[in-house]
Amino acid sequence: MKKLFLHLTKFIYFFSCWWIIFSINACAYIDPSVVTYVIQAVAGVFVAFGAILTVFRHKIFSFFRKTSSKHAKREIHIKNEEDIRIAIDKQEGTENDHSNDR
Image (cartoon, rainbow, N blue to C red; front, side, top):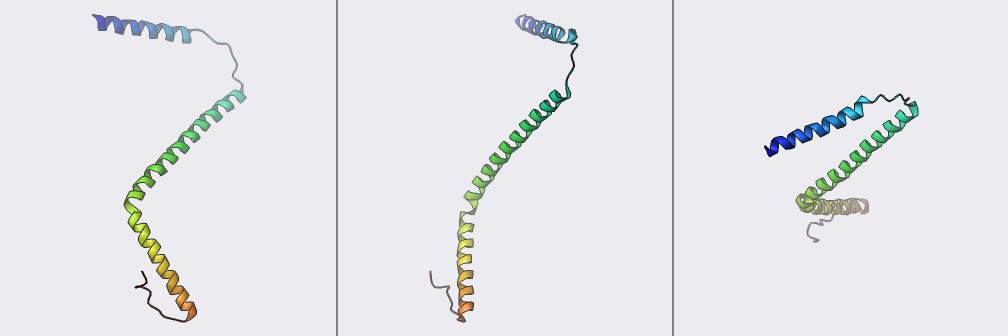
């Protein structure tokens, strides 16, 4: 019985609010500039929401990349150092093997 009374009270409350809000005629004119302001506000909310999603998406992706690619970054760094040594040797005209320098 208590649930029925609660549901009935909610229905009466929302129905009366709905009836009061939408039964009164508003003889008003909506200026086109007001519509433009509303459109700009809605667009601004969407842009801000998209920016927030992008920032968090990049943070989440970078977190997973850091944990799985620390070793890969070290290998790339070492490989780039070897390429630089080979390029310097070619410029100097020497063919040294730098694989045992580490």
